[in-house]
Image (cartoon, rainbow, N blue to C red):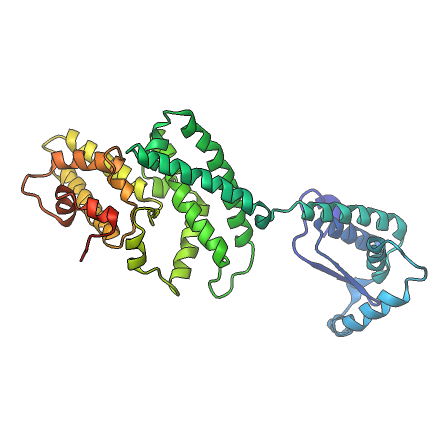
Length: 367
């Protein structure tokens, strides 16, 4: 490779092991590797004539070479451990003009070490994250007391408090995007994607914050959020939870006892509600002659009924979806005007008979 002509294009990746007849050195610092490669290229080593046998011999002797070179060629005490390591790197592969290169590599390694010190460490911010989440919890309680609900209170953005939540949401989203990105760079073993405390915290974050993203998305006129608007980090957090739940599942009885305070399991629930409201609006304005389209919309709405009832039976939705000011109850009013008076289903029976009041108290037996 002609490194002089391609220095702007080529960037080393991973760990490099550079060898000669008498020794070897390694580095995972991309800038340092570039310097070493260019230095090696300028040396007349005669490597072009090496055979497979010579290569094999070098591999077999690597360990002994490293030990021998590492100890024998440091002729004077070197107090700076970074300089010592850099010196051994250069000496191991017999590069001339070594003092200049040692200084350059030492500077590059210092920069690398500094950057690693600044690297994202999720544990350092965990206490701040807890405070931000507590702010959202308080906001959720206030919204529920106002009979509006967390999702719709944020979507309407009527008060300064609603707008203040945006800052907390941005901070939390940035943090969890970094956690997911960092975790994706690690090799995965046996479907253990995040330690339990991180997985639990990430799930709570997703169920608390993704509805706010959905509110922003539909307030701005979006549609089909799940396909077109959902962030990658939400998808990964959900997938990792599903993998973990294959080994341990929450009991429905536990959810039933805490239904008044639980978060809705499906963090895309409100996106499904928004889509159902759009279907109602389209069905209401669709021409009577558009039989095929009207049938398709009715089918989608009936499927949405089934989806909601499945969530209710599993105690997987928060009771606040039944607050009178919620988008879900607005959907129900719109939907009820479109269905026939004799239309009967588990969900229509559940809402018309106000069974959601018993659901909120955890006293409802569902089959």
